[in-house]
Every structure is written in structure tokens, then in C-alpha cells.
Length: 85
Image (cartoon, rainbow, N blue to C red):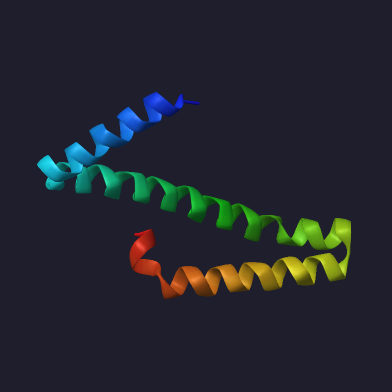
């Protein structure tokens, strides 16, 4: 955690960088977004793979709830697929 003074200074540096070199800042931002996207995709795959085990161990109702949540997640990811790639 940064102190309030350090946080304020960091925000100033970030704002200055964004204003002075927007191309560099955009490249950094897209890399971070791509990294988050890969982690989210990996998490989704792991959850889909664990769905049968969840159904067996926790029961049909828990499996059905998990499946509905994962289907909603898949629909959102499909809708905004350009952001994840």
C-alpha cells in the first residue's frame, strides 16, 4: 500500500505519462488488459472442467446453478470477444 502522498505522486506521474506519450501508455494498457483476459479465459476453462466434479460431489442443484452461471459467463465473453483477444 502506498501512502496518500505516494499515491498522489504516482497519479501525477501516470497523468503526465498519459499526456506526454499516449502511444506508449496505450501499449502498456493493452498489455495489462490482454493479461487479465488470459487469466479470465483460463479461469473459465478451469470452471467448465470442474463442472462434472461439482455436480457429482455437491449434487445436481449445485451443478445446475454452476452451469447456469458459466453459461451466462460464456454469453458475456462471446458478446465482448474482441476485448478478450
